[in-house]
Image: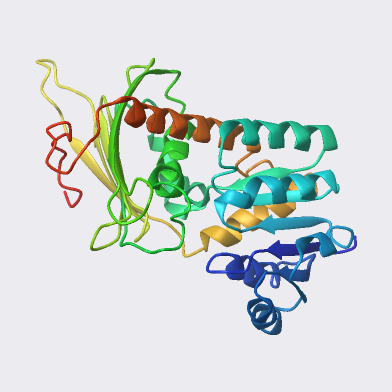
Length: 330
């Protein structure tokens, strides 16, 4: 079997790691690294291999697959051109700027019979694999995703930049159709929303409360899932989880015991797992990647959050519309 020829389009902060990992995957040939900055393309090519290229169109007839790691505003035209050229595509999240664009890309991939995966990387965090058997019927989900301000990524709002990771994760727990959604947000340092809180209710009865901020003093990525007889807290950064489970009841209804499980994810790099799943899907051996359809669902939910904020009265930092939330450190 000949190696799959791949190119990375956009080798900035994240794309350089796509190039690094592809250069080590068995059965993969990193054929090109593409960046509009020729010095950047040359720098990455020197370290990881591949031909440095400044125009992505120049590689379309020379590779089998691409990673698209460019600003969100150009996800759609570049991904569309790659699919039309008959290439398999992994595009970083969000799949596109708008739902209409995203749905068009999914339809195009199906028509061309090509793999379209989307980089919702938290799905590949090893700790998530550990907790999934314990998350069977979530009743309340709480997510905090906080980071310091960085100009990179501010071409879109914090919902599509950061919160979309948690929206995708919640949907992966299959809570059922959305029944109600309320949201508030605030523009602080960029020209788009920089901090957002949303509360969602699903038909299953599950309630989710999410906060995403890119104007915090530190980094925090935590998930908490409450069920009728268990509680799970996950730290994405340390890849640790604690699960407490009620184990039976006495005849008078008192709790017999509570068992605590301490879980730890492996040291596998999530991006390496994600790219390996993409390559395996191309070879017809795996369906573990986040599909275009799943990415569309996450983007639709993100758009509903944005619509809820836009339809409400203008929010300011002192507004009573901002809910009182438990401390993320708890």
